[in-house]
Amino acid sequence: MNKKVTMRELVGARIVLAVCIAVYYWCWARNDWHNYYTTITNAVAAFAICFFVFLASRERKYKKEVTDELAIVNLRRCDSICLKIALTVIVCIGFLCAILRLTVTTEVIGYMLMGLLVCISVIRTILFCIMDTKGV
Image (cartoon, rainbow, N blue to C red; front, side, top):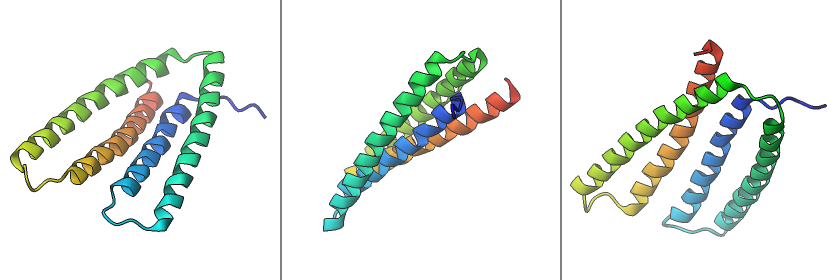
């Protein structure tokens, strides 16, 4: 069964990779360490590598198919919007760190950045699906 690869599938898959990165960060940024964290990090890393290989094969197949020009334009619009959102949040995080110099730890900053990564992936997927559905 040759299922056609859609741009939605490829965009949505980025959420999985962002969550893997955030979980991996969570394991490494913990103040306490339990032996099972090693198992979690290894499992997440193995899953992410396998998923990345699967995603690369899907992208290779997508590039061989007829390209949807409207979807590509919509994805570029979504990327532009998400870049503006990300830059705004990063600047806010930077000023927050400057203002709360001693109360915001690097661990908290890392959590904010990982949260931004996951949120931007979700926002990008939602925006793309809305734009793709409406044919904007």
